[in-house]
Amino acid sequence: MKKAKALAHFRQLNREGNALAKKELEEALAVAPEDSSLYSLLAATHMMDLWLGSTESNLISFAQATTCVKKAIALDKDNSDAYLILGKLHEIKREHDEAIAAAERAVVLNPNGADAYAGLGIILTLA
Image (tube, rainbow, N blue to C red; front, side, top):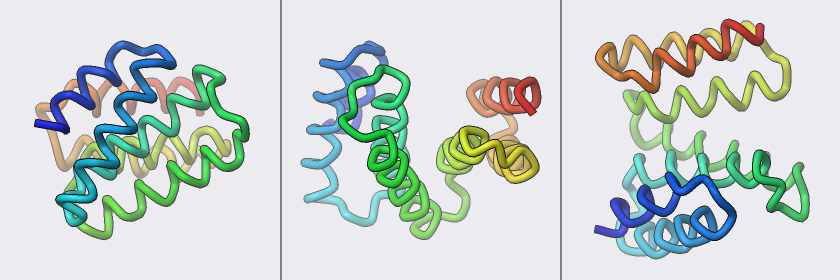
């Protein structure tokens, strides 16, 4: 239930929604600390902070996103969302080959996932 609420808040694509999503996810992780998908979405909220300019430190938000996505992959090596976020993090650092590889892995893991294909397309365009 909290994940669904978090996702709804996250999709508002604004500072308030993102902050509420983060709160819901942190509460959900207190109950289900082994849920890879929660870490993926939490990583996405930290990336959203970067895009919305709602962070006091870009470096800290980037590090938090990286930590969350690595935890998500450690918990579930087949988490396509985590690989897509990892690809975006690599792209931010202009690590194009790593970004492409991560996004391609997301597509392989979820061949019917529109987000994976869209993310790969964006990463290829930016590379």
